[in-house]
Length: 112
Image 1 (cartoon, rainbow, N blue to C red):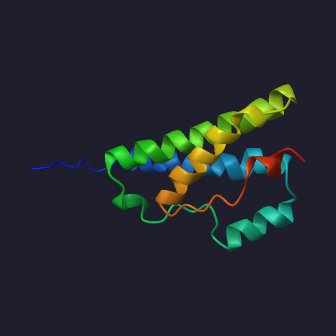
Image 2 (cartoon, rainbow, N blue to C red; image 1 turned 135 degrees about the vertical axis):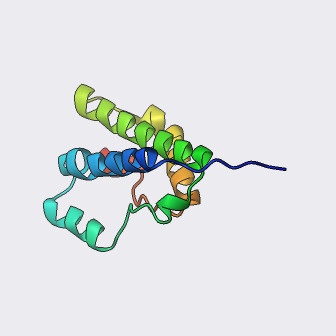
């Protein structure tokens, strides 16, 4: 018998707050308000079926969002190249994709 533990509402709220941080703090450093508004209107980077994620799944989503944010923060704070994080960035985008979370960027989108 396999026991699956459901994620808590606090964990779900935290995942949503991480996505909000990307929208509100990170993306404006790289993209126009109009472009970000279009992303929101197309519901890109939404977390579908959030309430259905198990404990392990919500941790995976949260960790992926934290990692992406950390890589982009490093670029913002140091102003140096972050190309060495390409594989890690892409891995975390794939993790999000496995939960139908569309993160429509590559690391190169943030380097230009």
